Length: 266
Ligand code: NAP
Image (cartoon, rainbow, N blue to C red):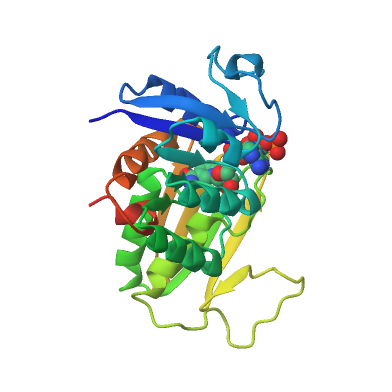
C-alpha cells in the first residue's frame, strides 16, 4: 500500500496517545503533525507522556493543513471540535477518520452533504473495536426473535456524552428489525426520575460512569423463561487501533461519509 500522510487531533487524550503510537508504528503511515489544544509550535517530544518524536504540534488546523501535505485526519477530541475539524478537513481535501462520539443525526446529515459536495470520503465510527461491531451485529440478529431488550453501557467517568455512541448505534440497528414497542409494565412509574433509563422506541438504555472502566456494553434480551446477554468489553484503548488503521486505509477509496465501522467490514 502507498504511504499515507496522517495528522492526529487530540494527541494527549487516552485515544489520541494510542493513535500516535499506532500511526508511528505502521510502516505505510507517516505522522506529519498533531493538532493539540495547546503547545503550538512545539514538537511531540516536548509534550509529557508522548514519544520522543520530532514532529510539529499545531493548535490551529487551518494552519496545519496550509503547511503540511496531509491525506487523512484522525480526530479523537470532543463533539464540538470534532465537527469543526471535519469541516476544515473536507474544505482542504483531507479525508477525516473520526472516533469522537456525540454527533447528532443532523451533524451527520450535514457532514455527509459536505463530503458529497467536495467528493471526498470520510468515516465516523462511534466504536472502532471489532468485537463491539460483532456485538451490535449479533444483537440485531437476536432482536428478530427476542424483541424485549435493554442496553447497559459502562464507561470511564471522563466521558462527556451519554448514552454512548455505541449504545445509540446498537439501538438503531435493532430498530431496523424490531417494531417500536413499549417494554415493562404498562402502568410502571419512576419513583426517581431516570430510573428506567433513556428510551429509544421503547428500548431502555442505561449509562454507568465510573473510574476504572474503559468501554463496556451488555445487550440483554428477555423472552418467556429465558434471557440472552451479549457483552463486549474493551480493556484498553489499544483495542480500538486495528479499527482505526482499517478506517484510515479504507477512507482513501470512498467518496461519501460512512457512519459506523460495520459498514466497512464484511
Ligand atoms: P480524552 O482523554 O478526554 O482526550 C480528548 C483530547 O482531545 C484531550 O487531550 C483534549 O485536550 C483534546 N482536545 C479537545 N479539544 C481539542 C481541540 N480543539 N484540538 C485539539 N485537541 C483537542 O478523551 P478520549 O478518551 O481520548 O476520547 C476522545 C473521543 O473519542 C471522545 O469523544 C470519546 O467518546 C471517543 N472515543 C471513541 C472511541 C471509538 O472507538 N470510536 C473509543 C473511545 C473513545 P484538552 O484536555 O487540552 O482539552
